Length: 269
Image (cartoon, rainbow, N blue to C red; front, side, top):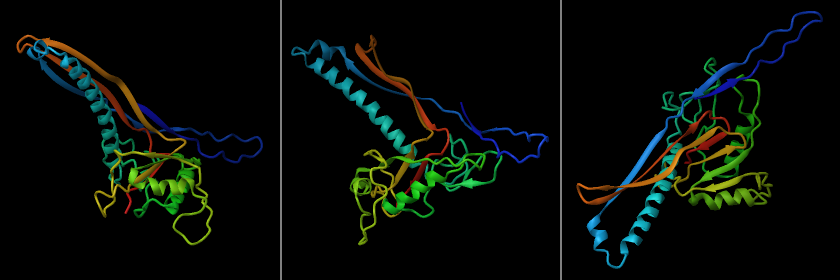
């Protein structure tokens, strides 16, 4: 379990010789990570091995081992992408969420003891553009800590997109001027962030399920966690009842966020 904390209130004025007002910091939302266990297996009859005059089974075994390892790599990519895609929600009962809302929500409560909420998602769906990234930039910079006083002053570190948006993302990242306008507006986002072009990220706005136009950013300070509990482990055993060799692979990992701070997103139009 990971525990987040609210900071102190502001220091209070005092007259000479009077008591200093006592303060305290308080526990905010906590996060309990669920560990996930995955497995995959295959079987090879001993007869196939015995009849393998030309040693083809050695190539088969090596190839199957590599393909099985790749399946686990794909699994991690797909599970992570699906988790992020499900986070565009204002629901207050999201399983695994520290504050009950989706990672990308307009109604994050500051703390368990506060009715004040913050947003880290576009109020109206924004396609990726300089103007949208400007909104993301100042949202990260103005996010308030649980004490509703400290401003986190975060900066965009990484923009996550599908390869379909790579051209637009690079125009924002590298262009001297704001793209798509007749004005000579300086591009103040130039070289201020990295791009993660992620083919497994296929979330889309409402207009088309194949637009893949959703995007999100993470800041220098963020609270997204990934734990490899056990890397892919291969094992085998002989099954006498069917005269075969049984191959299996297993891995365990867990993931999620301790807090939504340092993220901002839009599902796209």
